Amino acid sequence: MDLLKKFLYLTLITFPLGVIIRINIFKSTYIYPLDVAVFAVFLTILFISIKIKKNIFSFPNIKALYYFIGIAFFALVLNSYFLTPQTFLVSFFYLFRFIIYSSLILAFNYLDAGFSKKFIYYLSLSGFLFVVFGLAQYLFYPDLRKLYYLGWDKHLYRLFSTTLDPNFAGAIIVLELLLLFSLFQKKIIRKNLSKIIYMVGLLLTSVSLFLTYSRSSFIMLSVSGLSYLVVTKQKREIVLLIAFIVFGILFLPKSLKSEGVDLLRRASISSRAESIASALDIFKNSPVFGIGFNTYRYAQERRGMLDPENWEITHSGAGVPNSFILALVTTGLTGFIFYLNFWVRVVRKAYLGIIPGKNLYFKAAVFSSLIGVLTHALFENTLFYSFVMFWVFILLSFKDYK
Image (cartoon, rainbow, N blue to C red):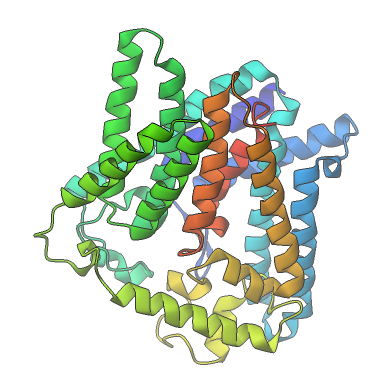
């Protein structure tokens, strides 16, 4: 068990590093430090489960998710005829990554409650380091256009932190803000020094969120914040939440010459709509089992939907700006039903677990985080983004959540 704890701590160290450090194994396929740490956790959980003869499928949540994984693998094999050995390996690699991250749901079932409570605070600290890195990036490296040749979008004067993407950075920051606020509310009756530290942390995290200029993240904050206040019966604070979001947006710098900082920009909306329409057209040809997990890039390339010069490296080529549509297209109606069933189960369980009294604020943070991520997933490929998966699956693993 000590080894599992050490590897879990390692995930917290590697999480804030984002995609800055990476190893290229195939074109458009990379391994990040967090992947290595989570893989170590996966192997340790597997070893412990075999040693104590624990059936991992006895956990309802993981069982529901692994039905989806089974369909995803079947869909990939079924569509392997149009893949080369290398592209099949690339697609399988991402499915395997999804499997090892999903194993995090089991992590705290093998550990004592005391460690779980400490880990919550360390998780928040890791998220705050991500925020600090983001603020440093905004001050000293606000122009991502220099990395366009590597497949990144041309973001300018936006906070994108170590994910190099303001929308995903925004989602992570909202998750950190929810956890940090729940810990603040838990500590509010304690010493003044603790309150001051948390208030400074909340202020910096809030500032970093607004500097992403990510509309999907602002919507996520609105929905998850509202969910949190409703389930904790703090309905009078809803007005404060609305005022906080409105004033935060109003005070954002507006004079910067960049389309990305224009919150009324329409180009990205049109681009998302076109991408979703293209995905649904592809879905019509394979509605039952889809085109195969993570083969969307290759399906688009075959249909001439991507730029022939950079189709292998562009990050937008592998996904759809809607996680549910991507699951539908790549695993068909069969996989989509099982995937949706998993999220319905965990959200329902999180909601039913909110009982006034012990750990109210943390349980509310888990529930509102799920609601927020599912909302953000309507605009981005959030649910399959490894850093978001890490955070969400860790939350689902905590014993206090159960």
